[in-house]
Amino acid sequence: MILITTVREGESIDKALKKCKKKFDKTRILKEFREKQQYIKPSEGRRNEILKAKYRERMKLKKEE
Image (cartoon, rainbow, N blue to C red):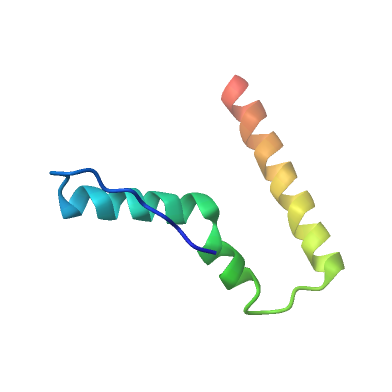
């Protein structure tokens, strides 16, 4: 995947790097790469998703109180 960052005339390098990093984070390339470094069984993946959903629900209920 290619990330194209347009830099306007007179724009500083720091600002251009910040734009590039933001695009990189939004595409979640690094997250996918880290997930593919080790194999996770489908049953384990589902279990993790359920646990995350329970945690989010608990935090939502706690926040409403």
